Image (tube, rainbow, N blue to C red; front, top):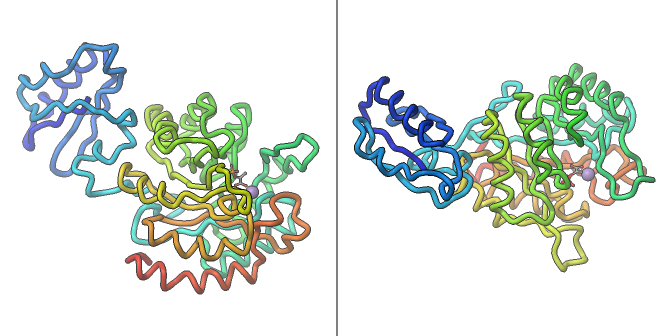
Length: 340
Ligand code: PEP
Ligand code: MN
């Protein structure tokens, strides 16, 4: 339920509403807007008392049942839905007029590889460096990442270039360690419904880049984000990375419709990962250009100095030159979408 308060509500009226919501078994989450305050009442509506009686309280304008199960994530929880959330990391804003580009190798492999990539992607206009230190691999015999050494190398590259750092956290046990280093914690497709991990990551207070699982419905993706918000962390960036379909010519099917829908339905910034999305470098550039048109706030692109020798995802990583060219070609598309 969403309780919409009247425009000139007093503080004691707000507090009375919060008390009543709590008394009826819901967790109150007040959202203070410029014009209006709303109180999101979190709890299973089917299992709790209805809150409609709150309409009679002074200060309450409307009590709206929420059909959507993702209350905190939904745009309507932001009242009217005109403004999306802005998430500022390292001085860069996701969800604002500036289109953000996160780039870097699939896996951190060596100091030389990550530094060379960081310098090149920064020069080309990226604002964040990515790189997996803990890698989710389908086979246990494949490269599993450099782990803490990978985090150290990313931190060194950040120090030198000033780029923000995005890296995946694979398990609850690693959350503390990864959060010590990363500016943004990535939750990967395979863990997007690992609810214990979502909660542990939320509790670090770090911004979270939440991939969509390869077999997740859009609503399930939003509900995973809801786990993070409902555990006190509002800084979630959604990332569409393709879903598994019957198609075999691409690794995944990049669902750009889901990006447009996520922008309409939620107030969170949304970015696109065309690298995992297509699984082939020759499609990545076109999908990067399509992203601003569907309302994306940024991109996550895999870039490697020598993709042929990459220890993971070689077929989908751009070379430094390809990335730089793509960034130049991307500019008119960003401008056409009224972004910078
Ligand atoms: C990655 O970003 O390298 C990755 C493993 O992504 P995903 O979780 O989307 O497969
Ligand atoms: Mn990858």
